[in-house]
Image (cartoon, rainbow over all chains, first blue to last red; front, side, top):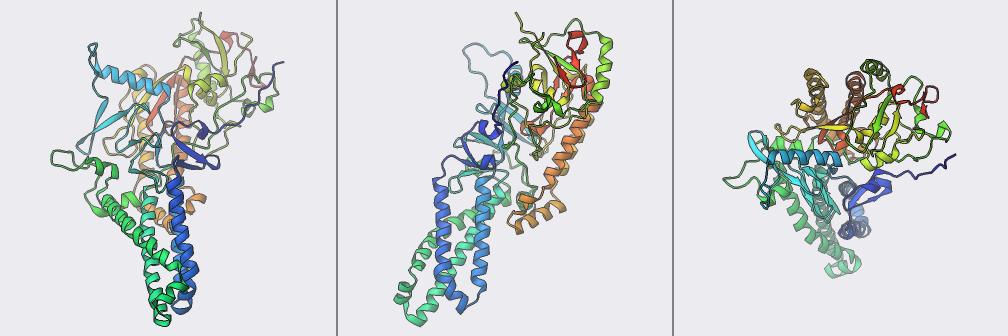
Length: 392
Length: 161
């Protein structure tokens, strides 16, 4: 009788490399430094609270009740966009698993040929042709992959991000393919909110000053001064940022490409991703499909207890296999590359094919149906999860 | 001396766990049309003896057409985008996006292809989403029967002992 080891169900986010922090059991994904994000939250919520406390009662009565209502809607939209940008996966590319990394290394070595000893090997670059332009794909030594076009490695989060725009400390996350539109809508709606609050602050002060005088107004509603200050400084930065990103979107460029000057200059390649039409570019960036995350943060790691042979069948995941599934695929586990067993008769192979066809492949008990199929397990875990037949 | 442990598997799901024991072939992305998800249809030489070229190309082309359908920017994606924006994207918390629906279709297709075409030839096709949509990988290993290795599999309880 061997003891049954109970292993805790570990979700994949706990084992993800990179410097991200995860909350809510993998649902929320952010960068490590969140201080500036909290400041952003504080400024937005603080200023809006002051607006609702000081301005809105007066304006609702004297001008229109629609003013606070619209402000509330706009505030909720800004918060929703901010939280979506901050908490979602920006489009992180998972690192290559060992065999994929080895496969790529072999390809690189084959392409390089023989490098004389002492000489540095050529840089790892792959050229691809996109829309009749040659684009260079760089190799990422951390993630061990050739980065797809427009992807870049964020050193703060230590991840390769697809369509990397920039790392924004104000939202506490990278901005990439998956959350760029939320980021843009955040800056746009925040600009509108700032302008709105600023305008109505001025209107309120003017209206009240007509009644009670300027200094008295300031004494009655001290919050107004703070709001105006915050809004004034925010306006310049946020509106400027929105304008800049509108320009980038119309050209279908990322901040990263703009900073590096990838598509500017006479001798450089022209942007191969631009449709040369502002409307088409905007539509692609803002109205494109909502890309799913390829990280599978909440999937369960494949960790079976190694010595569960004598445990009752109900506890083992194999219990979910119905009687008809009998693809008898027995693989001989060796520490050397696979060597065919000389005892395999060729005439038995068709019968394996027949039984393989009947396999309906039910889902395992330990991985509940997530939206995406589970990631292939890392090699070290695969070996420990195999149930060993000790009789042989 | 080499360690020899015999392991029995009873469905394709478990074969995935042992994929480290098999040789792998990776089909890379084809970026000629931009950043849309497409895989190269060039037939890898390692699979030369194992599968017919036409079957392989058919699989990759079908996968490419599924991804093109998911990433298509047209009427439906605009509608989905505008509707979601109007609800501050809260609707994405309840609703499944079109891309996710197509991904489910893709994984069903890959499962079906594995059962019908690849498993009988001793190959296993993995879903690209498991590798960050960077590659489509094929595993291949030798198949042995239970009997010739002296493995006694009990049909009723589906376990080896």
